Image (cartoon, rainbow, N blue to C red; front, side, top):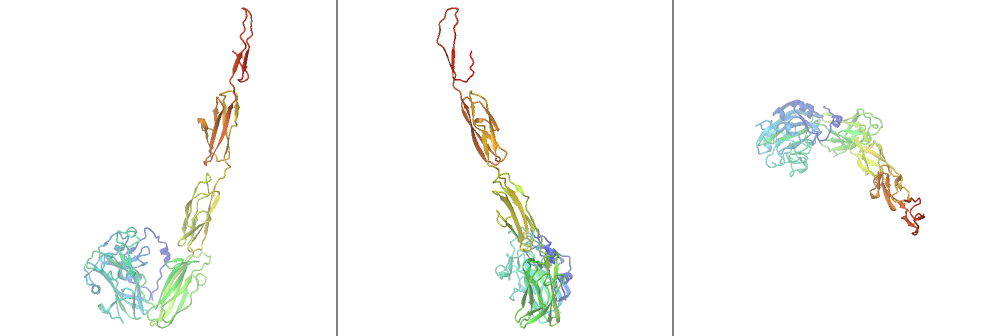
Length: 572
């Protein structure tokens, strides 16, 4: 028996984004790839051979690309590096390949000659009554050469109970689901079996041509499961082969999921519905189904024993899983709901080891699945510091910074802003405290922060110029003075008649005159006052008494009679 478990924490630490990309490697030998990558539970392999160039086979990490499988084995008709994104070439081929090499079983699938064949073969012994593995076929021949150049691959299985048309009476189990039709470019595309086809652009179309998240191949299948019934304990032989049709120009590849080549009476998986990623569930919000699938004949009812282990505790860290699961007659799949429970304790990553023991023709068969319980991801929230605007009606900028959490983050403001907004210009009419509440899809953590915007409320702007003034002489000098109350300092003054922009002005009117003063404060409010300088003056006149005749040497009085003017006459 072989057990394996991926540790998804490592996957969580890989950043997704503009630089996410398929990763391929030729570091392992074909035997290492089979035994350390490809094989899952219930299978042992021997006699591994590979025919092809060394650069045609390797391993891949697909967690950060769109191929649909997290990791596994890759074989190509050229160098495996051709698969790396972005898809920025309509006809990519990277050389390499087993030039001129063919394979009789591949050749029997199509009418064109085979080139660049890569063939991996090995013997294996299953412990269950079925064989399954998951794969994706991809090609640069899509879609231009559909029904023309038909690059091909096959999974040829031979052994007890199998009687097919290929070498050693093998059957090809790389089939379109629910059919006997081999998976190929002509068999799966946008017209034939389109439900199993993924269009990946033409090499010149966005977004595929600009982001390395997308692999280079113009098209590929969805993830398909190869299946065959086998006899437990017997030795079988499988040949995994791929080849170019006719030319060697455009490459194709096949991806096989790590650990999926398995033979178990029971297959285990987790189907996360919310609050989790990969096989990690977050406390308080993680919900999933533990999926138990039994292959082979399901006519009769059956039951399996379930053992639980790991650091996670049933009923404390996650909802209970029964110790026995019954498959009713005719039913091949049972779903057991799992919920990660919030215990309020920071415990780090806890593992839950589910072991299912079933009775088979070769004795007990054991299947192991590991999933994880994690504390809710930490949330972060920061809002700008409190601020004071200069004037009523002025705006203030709020910029809330959020990070962390699980899935989508939700922002809810108490007033003035639409939910979900993280930045805005605020124009409060009065001093207002803006309170932001942050949660995420998990909903177990709530953060609150606030920003106070102070709006000054100055007293009304009032201006009083010098009171009206009375003068009795024309052009008497008078200083006019502004007296300002209320408003917002930073006043601007404007006297009428070109008297200037100072708080005071000097005038000397010849006649009564009225002056206006307009004062504007720093917030743009203005008001006006008037001041009058009254010149109260009547024109001076003088009368000398009647002419008088005197003798030489006599004296006479001259008498002047002034009228109006202002007191304090002077004579000359």
